[in-house]
Image (tube, rainbow over all chains, first blue to last red; front, side):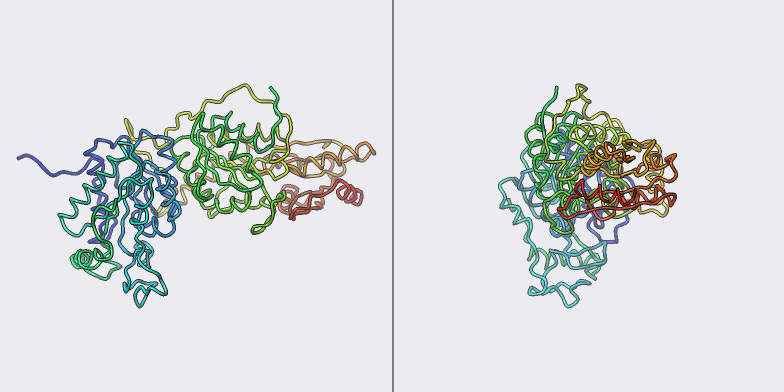
Length: 242
Length: 345
């Protein structure tokens, strides 16, 4: 019988450290499938974030660098400028990309750096124990917004993808979700588009992925996917932004 | 060929000569001639980026080093404070960066006058964790040019960040510089660098070691490297140490004033000598083992007793160590030093 589904070469055959129902494992896999399909494993350089995905390089089978919290796009900028022939991407969470690293994010985008960004938005800080993120929804309870996010105290969920889409250096921004198999396939297509844009020298591409965090949402894995579809996607609408 | 240039430009030209392939920086006085020089010269042989902050600049240098390029950034005191996070990561990931600090007055925004008050920050690590930089302190524009090239070689040899520590006077003053003929080859092959994993296993650049015992192992590796550097890379200049009764200890700009003082006092028959540490880390130990056991040391700084601690550690209680320093824009005059020496003699 012919095997039609197998492990990616770009992903090691290892159990991950992620919680049950977490979206990171799936997102790692989508990146690995794209790298395999584009046949670029031997020239890909990934930048892992600080956050739950800090050891993403333990799972990906290609060159990777760590970056300090928020600084992934500064690190990626330099690597891509030194090696323009390589394919360089960052994989960052909402705290990394849209709070501590906002400055690096905006300026790398504004310079139109020829990079691909995989932006995981799970509306919470995972690794540090479920604190308020820039993307936490109004009313969402976290360990540092105990009564729920309140606009006067905490401000509004930050739509950084829409902000970045305003910049002329940015060529592609799309928001996708991991809430159902159909959306997962769309997410993969978007990641592939972002990598192809880089290969075609089109500039800065970003894919925002709405991803689940059952542990700090206080929901089961299934309920988390429902919450993405019924609640999160209302605040963060899916589709191509630019 | 000799050319007349400022210390800041000499450092930039030294980097160009050393095959620097990447420079990122953010403007700050008094080192702006350096970034301007690099903006003009770097595109011929590599990448120049004016970063959005010192934080971004140092992390770009981290990335460029990880990619295998010879990379440099420059700043002045407040900017170097901002870079400390990145410097700690560079040290932890064993990357060979060159960082220039043309010091100005602090703390805080301080002022833009020359100072030496970042000595502790430079020689003790500066950021979090157990690490060191090699710190080199040029005393002339020529030496700034020469030591910049040495910095790149040391950084690559030991996979360690190297800091060139100057001050606003050294950065801004102009002196003739003999340019070297030897052009160092840029971006020599580094087997650990990120280039894409064609024909090899993936390379990972990181400073994160979560498994029990792994960080201690990595830190011991750093310490072993530091031990070798301590043994092999002490640099200093000694003057009149064989007969000196009082030895002045000063680095950088302060050592130039000390030399003028020594010329004047020697003409008057006073036996005064000089130890000028060139490597501030590792701090030179050898010159402090003088035959004259009754020698007295006078430490001179444009800060309030920072290098003094290293001199005391090197002297180890065998002799008396006196101190004279000014900071915050004040620079010791020859007369102030001569008066102090006369009191000690």
